[in-house]
Length: 243
Image 1 (cartoon, rainbow, N blue to C red):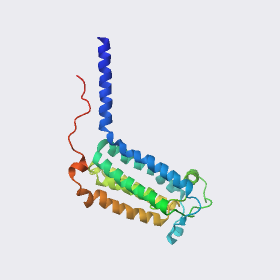
Image 2 (cartoon, helix red, strand yellow):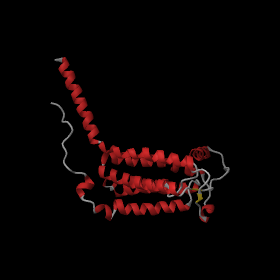
Image 3 (cartoon, rainbow, N blue to C red):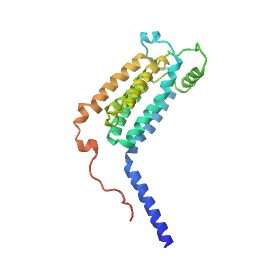
Image 4 (cartoon, one colour):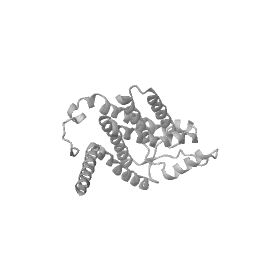
């Protein structure tokens, strides 16, 4: 009798695990990060000296400000929050956001591969010495001033902000929408005030984001059959809970 109860518990646990895997099977999309990280790491190692200099006259008029390292670093949490939230609560918005981010990131990788680029805008020394400049020093050491446009920091920030503003999940959440707007603008400014990117990188990121907005969130996406977009075909659960 005891062995039978233990066997039933194991079967229930296995059934629950399989149902969980089935429910969140859309996690496969995130495997794209493996490709992106490997490709980007290759570019960072190979594009070091011979590259096209990307800069604009306005870049020289923008002062360096180390305090922008705060929103710059918050970018990672901003992107992770949006992907994770939609992954759990809204599959359609999750697919839209991932399509927006990953297509743009792939365009960036292709551009950097066929047109190596970089700049010399970073300051050689800092006027102040504080924990923010320490973070900037660390950033400069870990992230080269190459492979710049379109700026992924800017592009992905726009992608997340568009996703949050477009989603019904946040339609009535004014605080979240305001926070997203503030953070998105701050991150975009940080790329220039930290001398991570040229204004040109920001402009091209906006151009790419505008194109992807039309494809993902506007008319083009709406032309895709609803059954394909929403993936609402009825599917039987992998296993039902055991009696």
